[in-house]
Amino acid sequence: MIKTITDIKFFPEVAIVTLNNIPNSPSSIASILGIIAENDISIDMISQTAPYKDKINLSFTLSQDDLGSVIGLTGKFKSLAPSVSADINGNNTKILLSGEGMRYEAGVAAELFAALAEENIRVKLITTAETEISCLIDIKDVENAKKILL
Image (cartoon, rainbow, N blue to C red; front, side):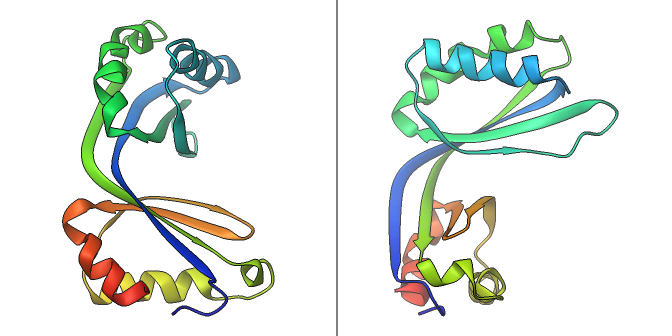
């Protein structure tokens, strides 16, 4: 097991949505998240790219069961700007690794991603907190990930 990690959980049937070319304004993100909330869709692993030419990309995960609902909302997202496009990918698993020691210990993420790289497991999305690392992987790689992490 990776140093300081005390708990590892796997969450299957997760989809990822990336909205591209969003105008870089606080109201754009608020509008998108508001549309999702109005439709009673719970999302996780929210990640924004650094602005480039005053545009951002916003990625988030959600239950595979809610994917159809989000696809139905893409027209509302495009109303923010005609250039907004969506990339949608299902059949993923979220891995949540946690441990209080991550708050103080350097190199935990390096060790984790080196282990995944050794098994050629591609990571689609990463989010972190002081004591957690979440990563999204393809469902086909779950058994290999369990083999090296558990």
